[in-house]
Length: 114
Image 1 (cartoon, one colour):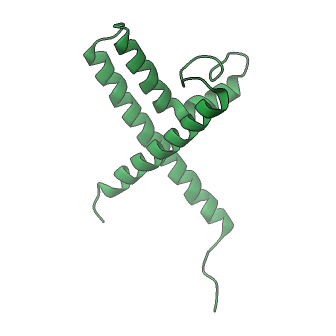
Image 2: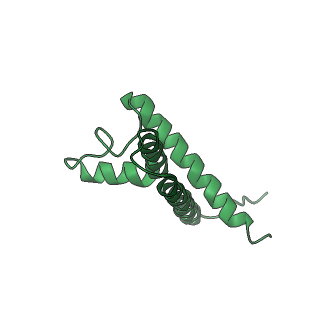
Image 3: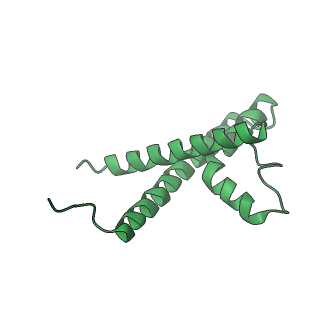
């Protein structure tokens, strides 16, 4: 197997999960995804951590693009946010693949005798 396939697969898994979760959150709350209420709140720390962990790359990209449009950050900062979002999506994919692998191991073998 090509050594680049697993990281690319993990990145695709993380990006897909981030997009699905982020889009679902936007539909439910009816607001653009950002590091602000109702997604991130000091009153609901666990919920905020879960939302940020799962949809964080989407949130970061939205915030960076909005800041760039308003002129609050430059091109280098935008690229830095983009690289961080890519690394975050890769890490999210690795975590999700690990959890899926662990859960599959707990369920036992999927081979059924004939």
